[in-house]
Length: 203
Image: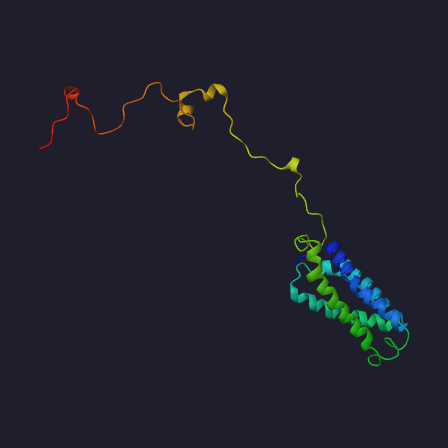
């Protein structure tokens, strides 16, 4: 796949709708806004990479590269969580480099990544069958060239005067039926001297 910049951004935004809903539910249940804020940071970070970084270094994206990019984004997001401290303690405690309740943002990221990947694989093709061919964008299926600008085949036309010539009639599928029937092409011919004689008996 070779996604465009707009295709990357659109795919990123729509694939994170499910994780955002999950993070919102977790934030309401736990009373900790860190879950949904982490998804927001993930979205802003991803869109920034999609616009400023990925187009300049990735010209073709094979399937295995998706997981490599996921590892890189995980490291960046984890560092941002430690610096920005989006949630209430003990969500991603910035006082500790690694440990404590860091499993919460780590688990959230990988669950969100799996959900986003499943959305791109299973849901997006239902929305747009030509999404991969369109560089990850959602486009209306229609004419690539407007009908009025499509080249038409050249049809051979013969004038009425030229069509009346014998040569044209010979090579055409329209033939005139002759006025009188021609002699049959057969090897059985009647002899003029026996034209009115009865047949001779055999034996």
